[in-house]
Length: 211
Length: 302
Image 1: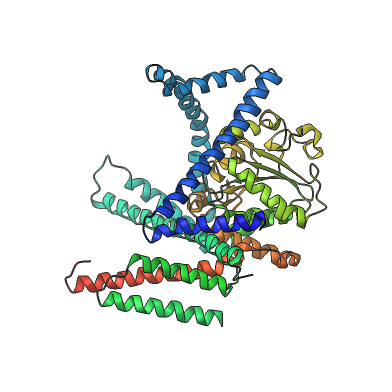
Image 2: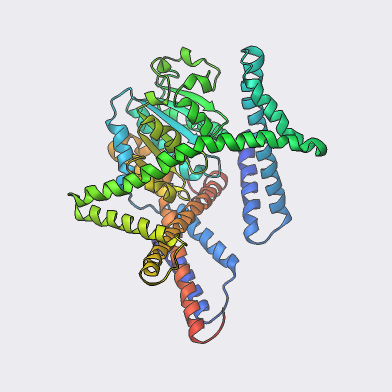
């Protein structure tokens, strides 16, 4: 029996084990789940060890003399201090560094490309559509504009949602509901694709019922 | 014949469940699971397939790769794990086929550790057997995985060599001919991220495509696709959303290059079972509502 056959059988038995959860929680499922978690943790540990600790930190500092990397190594070591009760507070410093650096890195990027560029696109494209786009495009742009404005109004809580303001907020609620529905539909499609992938594997590679 | 058998089995089952619901009897959730599984299995066994036509959001990615002059530089990032692979791996393979068929230069990389392993599968199963003349370092190269998420992009947008002194095989980037005129991501003609989690297409737009003013395209698992549509068409030239998007791209590829007709096109193959499964789920929603409204009319409780 060659390695490919063994790996196919192993994959098939693990797939069936995980799928057995739809019947009810059972020992077979728990074993497969534990194997999955163990292998995932091992894979990530080894990857980070070789990629970050060895290739970047060890080679960078010892072989290439990039001593600036020692800062990262020290911060990483400080992170592990939380494992030791009394000096666990030291781990807050690298954590503060990560939070600060990440916030700084993302703040301007999100503001310029996520907020400003999106507002610009919404307004500009609508104006262009009014200026000479076809009817289909114009309707599409109007729907986006109305959805954006009414959606924002729904999240404005400084004024009570009554009268005209309440009506506009209600339209916003409808847009949100339709968006959630579409998003849920996509989620179903995504999960179904995963099921398809596994059933196709069982029928094609394992049982060889389909070529 | 397969369609008729599937329709009879699935239709019969649905009518039976509708009957039970109308009678006010519960349908065990496990029966629902088995029914969905059987529907998918039947559609796979009988190879039910439906024609696919590329929608504008998919066609624009295809046209971009198609219209770039030969030798253009394209980055393809594998930002996914095995759980997402059935959905997004077909996209990545279709991109590889199209890009190399057009004689562009292909730069592989990954922001996910698991992407590196899945990339090696694509290299061995698609690139090497189907493009035996493609030379490593000249036509394609593999930069591998780097930890750091969007931080990696923040560096390579100004300097590749700072983050990737060597490729995944340990070769210095300066020793690869295809890196001679490449300093950073800004020197690329197109960036493509295939994924569905974080970091993924969104991070590529925010930290590479937009700041570097480089054309950006993406392939995403369906679950993340709705969050990416707002970026199209200004910040994202096109998007392949889920299996449907992948199938549309594969259909367009076969239409333009018939030589790929005999190659494995998993997304096109999966669209038949996918469609059947969706029809069944819609039927379940209808049956559930019929049962609910009947119960309410009778004043009963569910």
